[in-house]
Length: 282
Ligand SMILES: [Fe+2]
Image (cartoon, rainbow, N blue to C red):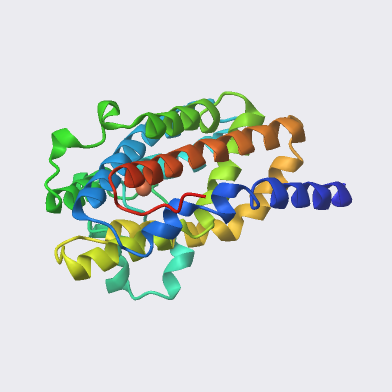
């Protein structure tokens, strides 16, 4: 059994951690250099807002389709935090932080200040703590209003493909599809792309958009840093589940990462079409 798990781990390392979107994301590599216009920043934020909002549907389906109450609750932690419930630190986590810092992090709605650890259970709901509202603040600086963001009609074909794959796989009622997709998404997020999404906007902020808020991105980077610690434990748990089917798990994960790749490649193609970057013709 232990040996089987080690073999499964290497399959995962190859298929997920070695997936092109994880090891060779040309959009993020370009984006992190920050050499793009305000118009592209606007396009990027708009497409991201569509993903952010449509993700809520996949996340709710994940709660509904969870196989145990415990995993329904874990999924709900993500969904409710997205919607604006601020994480509240569990008593055991409190010892390091001062009472003052804890209260500040649990009542703030600004992504720069808000708590990145704990549980939504007993946490406070605040409208402005919704991740989508943080994106609206970024949009404001770029001339995007509420009516310009987060709706299906604002999504490009590739963005919508990705969102639909998220719902089909991550939100699936099939145990292996949902677990494989979820594990793949965590690998994708842990691969460090949030840092690219901080670096790019940071340089256009310095250059042209001094009021551009960056905390949406730094908040998510911090959250992902914590997820990364539990990933292998979760995998081991899934591996010992009676419904676990390795082939179906891996297939769904790879399909999910293919969907993620369509999203980033779509943004890359849009940037090329808009003349944002020169592509060497072979
Ligand atoms: Fe979020």
